[in-house]
Length: 127
Image (cartoon, rainbow, N blue to C red; front, side):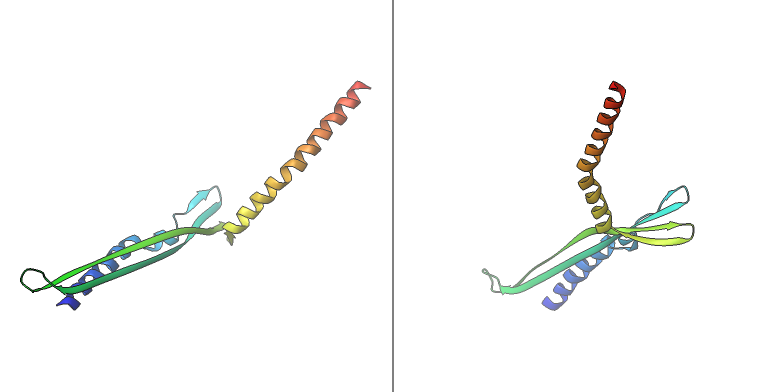
């Protein structure tokens, strides 16, 4: 009897996971901008646990069943598939973050060059 009940708990848990996980969770809806198609790609991790026990009841000594189950999932963006002119390229999130980080790192140097450029123009105008 207990085996049947734990099987029901596990089946219910797995059914709930199936409703959470489908291809649309991993491969997102395409985004079309002019002649470029961008498709988001994610990584999905999930886990589940179920447990149960039989024990003797306090009042009449009959067997009592107690059980439960649970599941969890996490989704992490991995990158984007970019389709343009028949060419397909994978842009990993790590590269995008690296490019953004490099751009931010270059800001102080860029501002300094712009500042020097304006100083030079001010000096030329003063002559």
